[in-house]
Picture 1 (cartoon, helix red, strand yellow):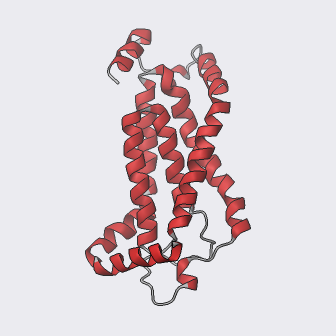
Picture 2: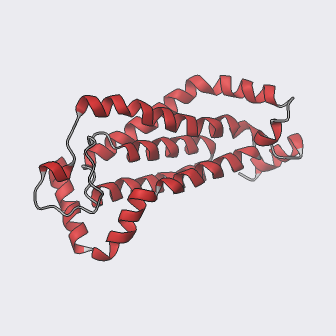
Picture 3: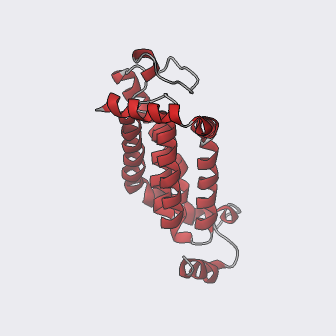
Amino acid sequence: MNSRLFLEINDLARATPWLHAPMAGYAKYGVVLFAVLLLAGWWIARRAGDRMPAAVWAPVGMLLAVAGNQPIVSAVHEPRPYTTLSGILVLADRSPDPSFPSDHATMAGAVAAGLLLVSWRLGLLAVAAAAVMGFARIYIGAHYPADVLAGFAVGAAVTLLGYLVARRPIAAGLNWSDGTRLRSLWRAGGGAAADEAAVAGR
């Protein structure tokens, strides 16, 4: 099933040469979009103080998810599709690294989950970006579908479960910083009234 779905997507890639450049570009450089989305999450949370712990945690959770993915990658040590399947179209830069789970999907899943904690609208945008990233990684021949789905699961699980533990300590740290010059990083000007207005406009 995993290989069959991969081959069907690979056949689609053969039939859509006009998509090769955008798919390959996004699969490789799309991480920049997720960095922009994280900054957008911080910008939104800065105007609604109750969401700042989630905005602070989102990039931390992503880094922890990608780091935690490495032992799984090493333990499973699944070969890349282009090392085991012959005659397939490969648009990806060939890598000796194992395939399961996908680091790109882990990153994307973690960012999407983290931003859902900040803002549903931004989070859904990140979910869409993650879905396209996962599909693109399969499309260019870098990963099997199972690699991508597992990456999404690892990223989302680490971020969401980690936030249950990290939320209160982060909130406490932010409250402490209110009495320092660091406050301007976490809070928009205008104090409580501005925060309430931002929440009302959510």
